[in-house]
Length: 119
Image (cartoon, rainbow, N blue to C red; front, side, top):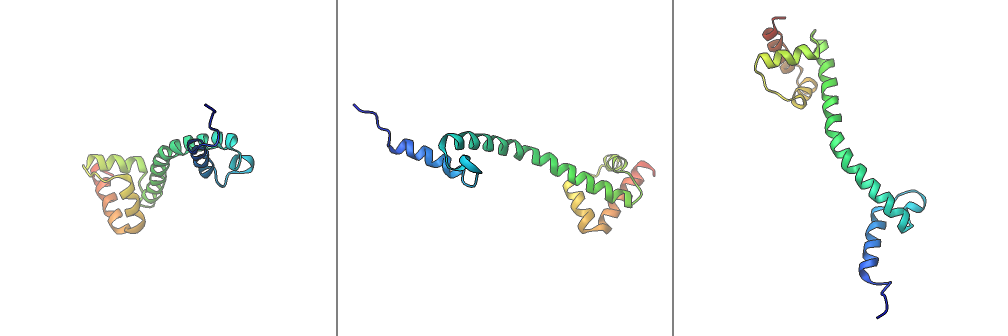
C-alpha cells in the first residue's frame, strides 16, 4: 500500500500551524517548518506572559498607591501596616481604583490607617 502524502490529517495539521503563524515575519509566516518552531515558541511565551501580567498589574497598583499615599503624607509601607493593624481588608486593586476615582473615600481609609499606627 502506498504512503498517503496529501491526506487530510497532514494538511489540516499544517493549515492549523500556518493559520497560527499568520502575520509572522518572513518565512516564519509561510514556511511550515519555520512556522512550527515560531508558533511553538510564541505559544510558550504567551503562556508565561499571562502569568507575568498578574505580577505586573500588582506592581502598577502598588506604584499608584505609593504616589497617592505620599500625597496624603504617609509612605506606602506604613499605609499597608496601618491597614493591617486597623483590620481593613481591601485589596490593592480596589485601593488603587479608589485613589483614582474617589479621593475622598481614599483619604478616609488613609486616615484610618494613620490612626491605627498612631501617626
